[in-house]
Image 1 (spheres, one colour):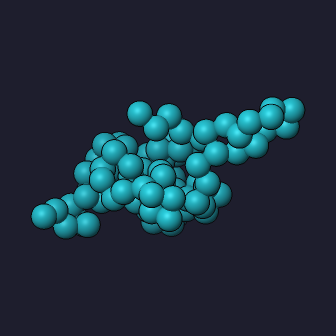
Image 2: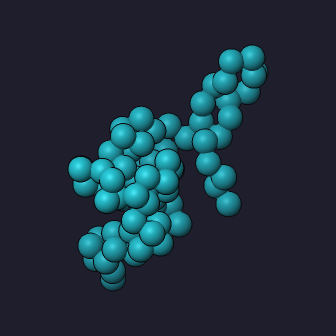
Image 3: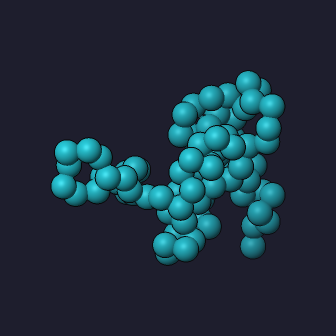
Length: 84
């Protein structure tokens, strides 16, 4: 079993210490980055590495538990991420 600390290190390394949403480098942010669930656990997302993202606090708070958005003039909601 892999510890959460090891998983967080893997996610941070994969991201190159950049937010995987806005691409800001961690050295430019005064606050700590977070390991974030792309598809939230509340919506059935897992804690497997393919569903985790390295996120700056701003992106993490703005995304919250959303996986889709409603765009003006578009009848269907649009997915925020490619969930391959």
